[in-house]
Image 1 (cartoon, rainbow, N blue to C red):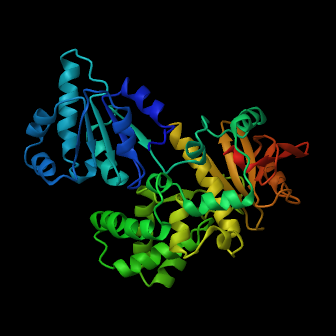
Image 2: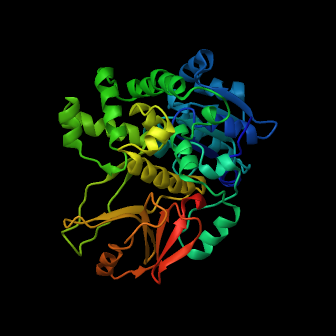
Length: 408
């Protein structure tokens, strides 16, 4: 069973304008499956996880491309990043000959920062780069939504196709996560995530940073999962896990660039020195985070100490996925100052700024209590949105609205 991905149209459009299209993301996100599903009949494909193909690519890149030709889909390109230079040579030669070189190569990889080093050196201006996360709620439900925009008109449009969800349904979604293989099968969560960490994540991490301390790295993963939705404090990680501060920073960087976590930067300017500059961390797959934190089922998670953190993580990552699926840079921030006034999300669009609060309740009280702090920035502050378990989009007051989380 194939679940249609919202990124498909972005890929096809970019392929008509760029010689190379690159899709990055965590392993088992369905990158290759999606591209293989939408590729033209004459586009061949090869994976560099295959030993023979990888050996040929390493030893003789020119012969590799002569063998497979174009258009070509190459999976796991980070296994042989040196192929990117030969790719540049091929697309440039075609352009010099006056031939159309668009859409020649589609490539995927699970180690973005290793790939991007080669891309910036060899394929600058020739490649369209897309991030791909797990399945979004809209993809799972088959809803055709675009980029999440917090204006009332867009939210009303989203509500027309949204599926009403109660708290139990939402926490089932949170607990199950967005891994495509889990969503199209009856696989057990624990079995799947145990294998995922052992076979995929650890291999990538070892490839990327020569992590010799896998036990400490697993403890680090659990620690970060338990802090999802909270401020990212490197010194606390280093002290608790027993690694150096540079190691903690390096491991966080690897998780971010591999698509395992999303780091939400704080919004600040030169106006105030009272603003907190510590980022927040979110696990992109709530199912993986729930497994690492050893939550046994959705009901226990919904009633446990981390219920609010997981609800916030679910909302933030769904919004982030909408940016990825629209091929847009993520213009999201959060606000916190030294008086501990916080706004969960800020959507910045030019000189407009929209505050968003994320609350587990149906009609949370005083949800807009901190929105007035935004006046200091002298921006056009839009009506605030409270994403919660409300049944409908209704005003809390003239400047803020309750909005069902089912719009995501």
